[in-house]
Image 1 (spheres, one colour):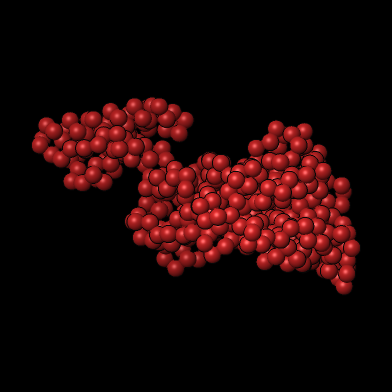
Image 2 (tube, rainbow, N blue to C red):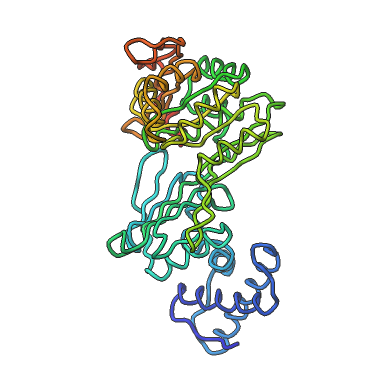
Amino acid sequence: MTLLASSSPVAAVQAVAERVRERLRDEQADPLRHPERARDVAVAEVRRHNDFAMARGLELVDDESECVRDVLARVTGYGPLQGLLDDPEVEEIWINDPATVYVARAGRSERVSLRLTDESVRDLVERMLHATGRRVDLSQPFVDASLPDGSRLHVVIPDVTRAHYAVNIRKFLSSRRRLDDLVAAGAVPAHVAVTLRAAMSEGRSVLVSGATHAGKTTLLAALIGACPPEHRIVTVEETFELAVEAPDVVALQGRQPSLEGTGAVSLRRLVKEALRMRPDRLVVGEVRDAEALDLLLALHTGVPGAATIHANSAADALRRLAALPLLAGRNIDAGFVVPAIATAVDIVVHCRRAPDGHRYVEEVVETTGHVIEQQVETRTVFHASSSDMPSPARREQTPS
């Protein structure tokens, strides 16, 4: 192993990180499974680097502790992104190209002064995908994966993108997963939380709607967390994101096809399999395709459900849920689907993101079980007004 003098702090960190990787590789020690050993080696190598530099009159690493943290981030974490991943205020990170990195805080985006290289972005993606069993390549240029902490990774590569990897990381924020947290943050009025908690306890089926980044998944996870502890919950997602904390829960996710094009597991298949697992509540992370038919059929077997759907209003959510099952085949028509929704879905909760980034429940409607002029009849349970909005000081804490 050769020690090289480094002309800059960044080069020093890179050189030390390479030596730490070599030592751990020689010892057959996995830095993720043996973090204490990785830290010991990093400390030893940083000090060794300084001893080498001092003996030859070269520039020293001034802050050894900071250098050790940077080295460990490169060896055991996700390198230059690790600081953003560790920042509790950062909700999402996205990379448009190596020189253009953005984050979202409190629902608002901002560009960060972080410059990467194409090679470092590819290395980060490979490390993130390493433990997921998923891949991204020319035959599969898109990938969705769940990171070890529950955060969701989405990657698109050239030539679907113009020249660079496009990376999105939606972080898992464990402190924002209970209804009480959302009430405290001003996202859900207290009396609405009481209504929703009762609906989950009573086994009513709830649909959470909203636009992208409106807080649908966060609210759905909080609603599931409000279920009685004796309820058995089975969740179905394309990629693990809900990270539900409950005594009796099974989480299922879809699977991409293999290199031979076989072995794919769709949401439709997972919904059918979930019904064989004795659920007290079936949860579909997001309804976006023909699995809407399987969900409706499941709800009509007496199993309560919960799901999210992209929509502009609660009424629009019901209309979209009525349209999606038509994708399942020609023998499905609105004459069957609309009455099925009217009797299967009990409550729709619509979320909205304000221009200032604040996310909140805008309306809650309840179905009556009737269909009028081919539309599911509803009554309004709650609609947000200006008096329901939190003060600016409280909005800063609003969850994603």
